[in-house]
Structure formats: structure tokens, C-alpha cells
Amino acid sequence: MQLVVGLGNPGAKYAGNRHNIGFMAVDEIVRRHGFSPWRRRFQGETSEAVIAGEKVLVLKPATYMNESGRAVGEAMRFFNLEPTDVTVIHDEIDLAPGKVRVKLGGGHAGNNGIRSVSAHIGPHYRRVRLGVGHPGDKNMVMPHVLNDFAKDDRIWLDPLIAAIADEFPLLVAGEDAKFQSKVHLAVKPPREKTAKPETA
Image: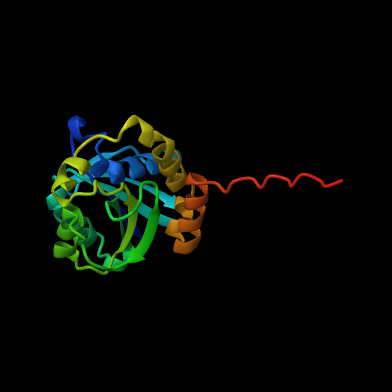
């Protein structure tokens, strides 16, 4: 069994924030893959399905971002899972908008949700880092992530969320590099090569 966690802040006023891209991703995964209806448990909301032959529980913590680890730890203990069975999808300011990186373990890079999860279950879980860009000034990081995506961001945000949901079975199957590559291609498809004009 795998536990897939989307990070974000609960409530309508946060729904469109950059910090909530993790919620956006898991909402689309649940919608596209026939997951069960959401139900409240483990200090959050959960939905489940069998993907790529494996049971997957999706969790959206109902605590605020900086307490996300409480819900993750509770669900992990209930199902007797290891940290390596956990995947956390979250915003990443150190990646350009629309970039995706999958990695196992590491630090929190200032993300309070990741800091909380690591405090509760240790650092050895998989992270799907979704780039939201850096505002250029560290004093502007909090307003940046707690503000809604701009209309212009939809050019890359919509294809990113759709691709993550489409390619989710690869993530469940542990094909991280293939998942990352396919999402990248969907967000930024290669330019068609223009034919060279024929010389007489």
C-alpha cells in the first residue's frame, strides 16, 4: 500500500494559492482515476483506489501546512507503513514554474509542510516537488506562496496538473524518472522542427 499526500492549507480562501499546488494535484488524481469519495479521517480527508495493481490512499491534511505531519504520521501508523511507502506532493520555490522533480529523502528547503512531515516520520519519504518559482527576494517568499496563481500561470499550471494525474500510475509503479520525463514533455512539448528550405 502507498500513501500519497498533497500539501496545502484547508479552506476556500487558500484554494488558489501557490502553496496549495499539492492539493490541486491530488484532487485531479482522485478525479481522473475513479477514487472513492473523500472521507474525513486522520486529521484530514482521504480517498482510495487500486492503481497499477496497488492500493493507494490519498491524503489531504486538514491541519494547516505547518502541522501537516500530524495527519501523515497518524495515517502511516494506522496502516503500519514505512516512510518509503509515503509520497508527498508539494510546492517548491527553488524550481522554475512548471518544473517537476521526484526525489527520495532530503531536507525541507524552508517548506514548513515538509519540515512538519519530516519531524513526524523522518526524512526518508519520496517527494514530488512542483516548481512555483521564486519571487527573487527572500522577504517576499511568504506572500508569494500564499497568493493565488496569476492568470498567466494557467499556461503551464493546467498542463502540469493534468500530466501529473495522467502519469500517476508510473509514480505508483516506482518509475520516477519516466514519470518526471513524461510530465516535463507534457508541460513543455518539444518544438516541431521546421523543414529546411530546399536549395535549387
